[in-house]
Amino acid sequence: QQQVKQSPQSLIVQKGGISIINCAYENTAFDYFPWYQQFPGKGPALLIAIRPDVSEKKEGRFTISFNKSAKQFSLHIMDSQPGDSATYFCAASIRGNAGNMLTFGGGTRLMVKP
Amino acid sequence: DGGITQSPKYLFRKEGQNVTLSCEQNLNHDAMYWYRQDPGQGLRLIYYSQIVNDFQKGDIAEGYSVSREKKESFPLTVTSAQKNPTAFYLCASSLLDRAYGYTFGSGTRLTVV
Image (tube, rainbow over all chains, first blue to last red; front, side, top):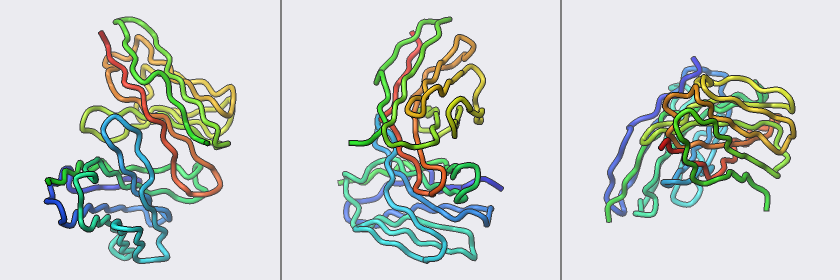
């Protein structure tokens, strides 16, 4: 019940296209859903996060869509650029429970072709 | 600037040798975590600590040990009992009372030679 399932494992998108990464969870107690971006040889960095009281959050070219009834959330990267090529991790946590420990998805390796 | 510092960036270990990876944070975060990442793989939790002098095993703790003597520091020792230690090791920290996610260090790449 603590799992977060992420798909696809890898994704190739042309420059200017839309990249879409999906995550699904089972535990309805999750109330914080961040996305992390990791470049090769670096640690993951927080990209954008959402709480379940909103259905969408946008920051620049990055948008999280959240579907509470389906227990799914997704990351959309508009106008994808070669510099967006990285590994993306979704995650979820329960505020205040066990110290806000994050449960991570398995990651998606995105390649944006020029 | 506040952040997490991992050192060294690269580390080479001989067979049968223990090595210690350093992780220091100046974010005043209560919790600290160690993750292992294999090539093309996700993040696997080794150990975590939510308070000084206390820590808990994660999913793959065998062959590893940690200590938390100071709030700022959470070193990881990779012991000779860890048969396949070659990996990228990531340290992270977070607050306990607010869900703002984790701050990660830049990682240590450990190679067995």
